[in-house]
Structure formats: C-alpha cells, structure tokens
Image (cartoon, rainbow, N blue to C red; front, side):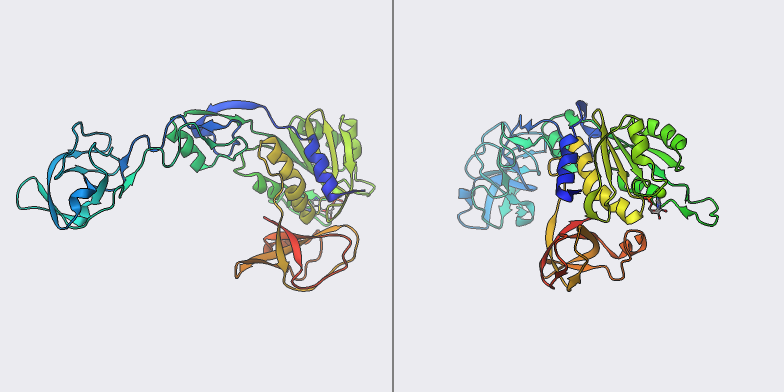
Length: 398
Ligand code: AMP
Ligand code: MG
C-alpha cells in the first residue's frame, strides 16, 4: 500500500495542465493566469497630485504663512501648459499632473483664500515632493506585474486593467462529474425507509465546488449494480475529473473499481496508507482522472481536500498543490499506530501562534457531525502512538 505522500505525488504526476485560452479580462475571475503580464506603462504614468490643494515650489515657503499668486486651476485629466514661476501656485485636484516648475502640493485644508482676489495664503510649509505620486513609483514600465500561475482575483483584474489590457490568457476551466453510489443512499427531500440514509456527500461536494470556476456535472446516485454503475460512469468519464463516492472497499457490493476498469479506466493505485480514506481508488482514462473515494462523509471530505483539490488546482494552472502548515498541539494525543492519521481539529490563533485542539468525541469517518466543531485536519504520522502537548503537528486548514 502506498503512502499518502506517494499517492499525492502519483496523482499530480498524472495531472496535466489544461489548455490555454484567451478570455475577456472581466470574465477571468477565478481562472489562473497563463502568461506573464509585463507593464507597458509606468504607474502612475506622470507625476501627479495625491491631494486636492495647491501645487507650488517648496522653496517659496521658507516662512509661513506666505501669500502666493494663484495662476490657474488643473482638473484631473487636464494639465497646465505654462511653467509655474517663483511666488506662484496652481490650484490642483487629486490625480492631476503636477505642473512644470512645481515640486509639491499643499493640501487645501492648510490654506486660506486671501482678501486679495487670486491670492492664496499658505499656512504650512512642505517638503520637496510632498503629496506627489511620482511617475513609475507603483509599477515600472517593463517589469512583470502579474505572473503565470497566479489566481485571478478582483485585484488582478484591476491591475491588468490599469495596464490597458482587455483580454488575458488563462488555463481552461476544468470539468468535474460527481457520482454517489450505494443502494442505501437516498436524496434528501425523499422518504427514508428502514436501512436507508440520506446522501450527504453529493450536496457536500457540490458545495465544495461552488464558485470555484469548475464545470460541475452532478450525476446523482447509482445503485450497487453493474448496469446502473456503468450507465452513469459512461457519462462521468466525459469530464476531466470523475469523482465517485462509495463502493470502493472490500464489501461484496463494492463494485466501483471493477466496473470502472470495464469502462476502460486504468488503475494507478487502490488503497493508501491513510486514515480515514484507505480504500481510495485512483485511475486514468487518457488524460482524464478518476477518483473513487470511500463513502463515509469524513473520508469523502478529507480525500477531496488532500487528493482531489490539488489535482484540480494543478489542472487549472495553480502552482502550490496542497498547503500544509504547522501548529502546536494543545493536548496530549494518543492513537493506534499504523496509517497517517487525519484528525478533525479546531485551530485557533493565540498569541501569534497556531494552536491545535483535536475535536473531542470524534467517532471516526462516519461522524460528519463532529466536523462542525473543526476548521482543519491535523495529520499525524502513523509511526506515533503518542504525541505530547506542545508538539508541532501538520495541519490542513479548510
Ligand atoms: P462505502 O464506501 O460504499 O463502503 O460506504 C461506507 C459508508 O458510507 C456506508 O455506511 C455508507 O452508507 C456511507 N455512505 C456511502 N455513500 C454515502 C453518501 N453519499 N452520503 C452519506 N453516506 C454515505
Ligand atoms: Mg457502498
């Protein structure tokens, strides 16, 4: 049985980045950039005023208050053609180009209008360069402002816009199909008869994939029968990733791996040294990835986060596949040694450190209710039977 780390590596090895397409910039939120964006412009493109006030020569304000002659006014988007001379100033609005001859701006709040029309009384002196944003101070022309592999958020849309871009190259949106399996599984909203349970994996997976820039196809529930499985698998295998829950363990009716193979899926591995999640099946059909994960909801949730999401991220072009950080365990922890153990935990930031509190009364992989007490999995290597309070442990924050 392969280790968790080997399994993740194997999955990522089989995962190909999707093709690149060019999209209108305003449609790219949630996509990953497939090009470096170089600045064509300095930002700001000219020296500009950071304030509403008066542009002047700082040398004119050796002593204050001082009276200066106001020789003009500049609106944002406008300019002042002449050179401002000694003893003069120009009224200026935020974002307007600084006129020639001046080297700073005094805020309007630090001035008053003189009785003499056209004259201003400046109440405070300024340093050279004060209240000026200099050409190129935010972005220098020619530098890379956005890198390939970055997730495009609202801010990246704005940055590319500030360079005049209207289209960018991104990695295509992946498609993912979900199929839940099990004779006992019933969609919420229907009556439950004895021996049946509601489908909690389907809605959870849909929620995990919501607003994630992924084309999701929900295939519902297949019975534990070859015919039912095969019909729905044929549909699922059209997506870049096909995710099935249930039916991958050792039971007499756990038919998923076998039927997947009949549908042309090549097994890469079946079973991982992890707890929960041991029965995970991973295979490929061409470039398509197929994951059969155990149906207990905690197993489904965990394996999605630590195995399937990294594959999705890689397909979409994102660079770091799985973010594992470390925190201090805040109580002694005991376990049966064996597989790498993922335990639901509450991680809190206390005094600038991440503190990890394993969820109390966690009953194992069916106990989805206990996850409402948690915001992370802590991962403990299988070789340990005991970890002392204050040990550093790996955590995967949700
Ligand atoms: P399996 O992986 O099919 O052996 O199922 C393991 C356990 O998870 C069984 O108790 C199933 O009833 C339960 N289970 C399977 N699929 C789901 C599902 N979609 N929602 C909730 N529980 C499930
Ligand atoms: Mg089952």
